Amino acid sequence: MKDVIILTGSGQIGTAISRRVGYGKKIIVGDKNPENAFAAVKIMTDAGFDAEAVETDISSKQSIKNLINEAQKHGEISMLINAAGVSPSQASVETILKVDLYGTAVLLEEAGKVIKKGGAGVTISSQSGHRMPTLGAETDELLACTPAEELLYLDILKRENIKDTLHAYQLAKRCNVKRVMAEAVKWGEKQARINSISPGIVVTPLAIDEFNGPRGDFYKNMFAKCPAGRPGTADEIANLAELLLSDRGAFITGADFLIDGGATASYFYGPLRP
Image (cartoon, rainbow, N blue to C red; front, top):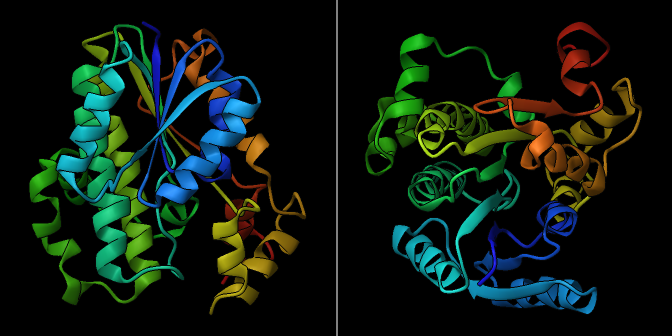
């Protein structure tokens, strides 16, 4: 039996992180698209990793439980890497809330019940949550602490109160950060840690969809005018995740890390200011 990593989402960021921390462990790759999961597994197994694909829809609590049950057949779950999600140009408001918000909340809850003592997790959020105005302490607490099965019934998340898919995405990512804070308290009872990473524009197939979508010019302008002057790479996100998942990050939990080349700074105080 080995320590097990659960990876949800078989895109470039999730697989880059898994390759940094997955040696000597069993990597269970969950993705709604089996072809994507098997492709990621092939790349990893061809590179010497022990990986296996499981079809998983994180918008379904039962599917998440099935993924965890499959992972537990191979050993104790010592790490969670949640990189599953959809973008504003890829999905409807309802799908974004169901996958990026509800699905993440369920995954953090369920993984926290079984995480190994001393284990760790990261969930991929987004810079988008940092650009949304503050929601207030009461709303933040509701997003953080409402049981996952009741989240989508909150007034702020009702369809009539959401302007468009970008607004839904920002709400989902703000919720992710707040859920991580609340879950860190629960995970801490097992001396386990959970953090979130909020990447800016990282060159992945999802980002390319955005470049070619209705907000493409906005995103291209964003990375051109951010202090870094370029988009990021999946491996740069993995640099940070490797720290957070390792013993070197032992004092870090319940935190969110913005890694966007300074785009958010430029949005508030520089040439990207609206």
